[in-house]
Image (cartoon, rainbow, N blue to C red; front, side, top):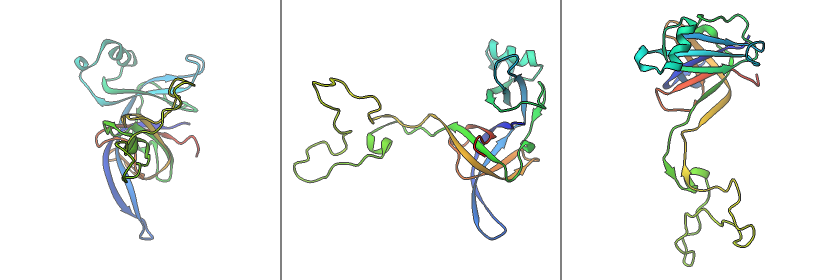
Length: 210
């Protein structure tokens, strides 16, 4: 059975293992997440779970989203996300997914939206080198570099590294280890860093590579 949960990034701290080693962990406030819809190959062509997170007032939702919660008989939630899983056996609409869905030692994939860095140049965005600061280099010390020949192909090739918006994109970190689960506090502690700012919404699901 596939496992997944939606959570909120609280921040980072560290734990000490039995052998004295320091383990950096990200604390995630995970769930409880009501199951709003269960998708199966027979009805939808693929397997997935639709989960809600963070209670909300009805007036805060638009009609399409509110209709999904009413159809499921679930209290409205601020966040509604669909997570694809290999199997959805054992889940039914109205169930509540809690932090104990995962246990210490489990491998998970964590998805979130990365921190925004605004409009940045190629050195910050793509880790390019600057040119020498010596005489004769000209006012191009932090430029993106050659754009290509002007007569042929008369255009800039696709995927040329240029300046632009850096960050604020969906990123998944794979194969992270769950270090500890605190059911009383709805907390999951995952080894390592997870994309996003403090307070941002993240999704944990069973690792595809484990």
